[in-house]
Image (cartoon, rainbow, N blue to C red; front, side, top):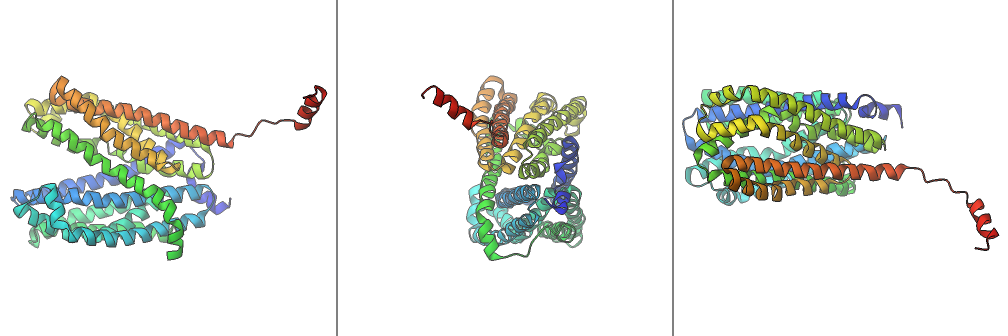
Length: 467
């Protein structure tokens, strides 16, 4: 392995706990910026005083989530393949993989929007949009969706930065985009008078800013991309597809699980639904660090897997679990102490207050098991078993949600729904942990030297005895 390759593979030495902590915290700051901008975006739109606008953004966001899941899958494949090749000392192949993912992202980002826009009215109608809300949602999506290719390349570039250990620049790209969005929102919505169109245009400009902020350092600082070639893309299609498709399917499972929970909660009235809405806002803010673990620990495991340092792979996985436990304990304590002020902030009463108190207690602690699943999924993606993460996520968000949420609902009402969902998470977290240990165990055994056997001694022994 060359000195340059060793320099690029920064996770092959040093404290793994320090690597996990640094990568998780920096990645989570970028996620927090996205959550904050989405929240501010909705506040500005609601200030226009038209409920149809907020509803239109909700329907549009649901549709855009599925298109963005494709970008997430491609970025996961970029991060896993680049980290693995850097760890193995194949820096040039890492650059080829990065370029191939970017080209595929560009192609998919041009084709998918055309297909969606041709069927936009039908797709939004399937989600429940109609009348004025449908018209507004179509207009909003029509402005943002054509920049899918921009977001795809930006996310691939950020994945390359993380794979090379440069989480800070990846984080800053997200923050720059968030700042642009937050600044332009009030200007375009109110000052220029564009309303909902202004919010969409602000999002487009934010995406372009993220692309520039991520792609520039990936190219200029790390030389992370090779010159693109269709022949190289064709050669790399199979390994990219092997990770990207399961990763897309893994992400799509999450809204299905959420839909099951919302359906179960809805039967207990508007107070219960309001409580779910508050929890939905608190969860990403309180546990963004845990959500960031998938993107943070993947490059660490990927580099050590590529270098065949399987003991460090297992240690990195356990460091991710330990980090999750420590963070969840600390945040759960803070939420428990602040449960009353949090409920008062949302003027919560009745069932709404009960659910908020539940979240600020045992449900917060149960977030540890969500973290275990995130770390396990990142491990599977980077250890060559992305399908395992798909199985785990779909199992957790279908059987693991529906069965236990239904049982909990029958036993304890709205609170039982959330407790049942959490219990399903515990089961699939333990399954994923065992599966990671088995995968790493097989890898470690594959490198174990075969026991020495003296063939001549055996032959003479068998010969003397007439065998």
